[in-house]
Image (cartoon, rainbow, N blue to C red; front, side):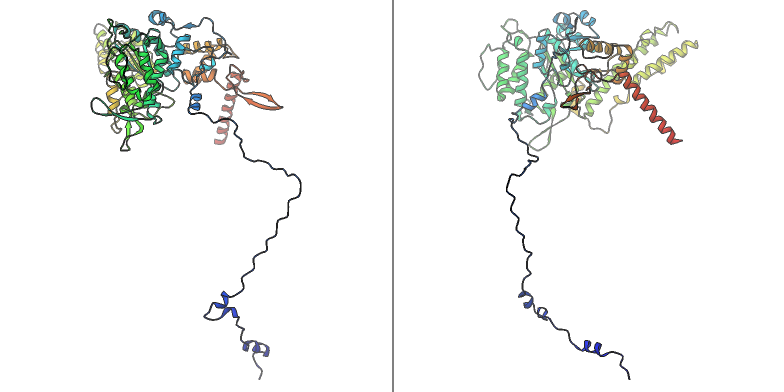
Length: 594
């Protein structure tokens, strides 16, 4: 009988596998006593070859210059250059003087023309920080600005305040680059030339951005206010530098509770300098100075005469909201609780009376504008009512005139209304009124129909003049804006004013390449958003010019204003290229759709 398995396989099955000593059952001692594994041998590094090797220092910056001192970079950022020796002197340029400011007819004759500032006036405005770094003063031979209709109105208001000893309170707003700060600058120059005390807060953002030390104080009514000693000291320093000649002739006439003793006949210049030199004395000195210049004149005392006062602030919307400062409970402090902002808002709202007359003027900011819904509402409402109220009065006058006969109504005032400067919704109502009256007169309508149309026509307020009930209302701002403050909107230039400015650029040598023609004026006026003066300046004299310069055999891109390095491309060529590119893009879209 044969076996189903071979002998060789049977032998393998009977032999038991050898048990390794390293795998003893129920024991780990053999594994622990096993020889450790050998580590990989380390190959010794070969010695470097004898000789010099090239070592390159990468990303190592060697600083040889001294670090900037405290405040040096801020001073460089705020540096203002008021003269360009490469620019030409403009012949026949009118200069803002005391005689022109006091004579309303001469000031009116300069409307729409560029007017320069005198050397003394420019230095005073520089001390008050009225010139801004980004306004393009460095492009021209001397500081000058366009005298617009708003500037003439401000001059007339200043004269009225001086003669009648009243107080004019104004808030100026408008688009970015429309000329609000320049209007404030001209409004400061006019009272300075007439011997007023001029005070200016150059940037309200510096009051509320929590960049200066502050401390709480108790006011007379028991409330808590917050004082910023260093900021107040800097404002007092500007006041002393700009009004030194005037304040030297004025003496203190009141008794003040100050931390230091004062002489009885000390001048206001010396008083202000004490606060400017010592920040701890700045706040009580500011209170004493404000009390002196707002007090009635005392001619019987030496140095007792008190001139009118002009107080201006740029970027006022920053103090119409919560500030970045915190109180002891880590809650934001409202800007009206800051002592220096509280002083300005008290004058703007009329709580602080100026006995000798004056003007309080504030301008909003377009470049650093924060969100202030309450202030925006009141500005839009005042601007809309400024056009709606005259339209309502004109409608009532037309209704009275049509009671005699249909055709004897005088429509000339209605035809002369400039709808381009009005609020869009009010301008639409003016056009509606014009069309309705002309339509009835052309159809020989009866007297009853025309009177009925005028009675049914109601002047409607724009939507911006109605408060949104879902937004929180700031009562501090409401109290200021409802106190009778007049609001002025600075709009774009007219084409005549734009032409005057561009001719000044050309005579200064800063606008080259082509004469100032109607076509060029219309083109630049349109590209500037309807005559925004800031955009017009950028589009004419402040455009970076591209010019290839040979530097060590390699081309380099240089940038300079268009008056210094001529722009190599013609404006007509640029316009033709843009038009061709636009038409090509339209044709591409049409072909894709087909």
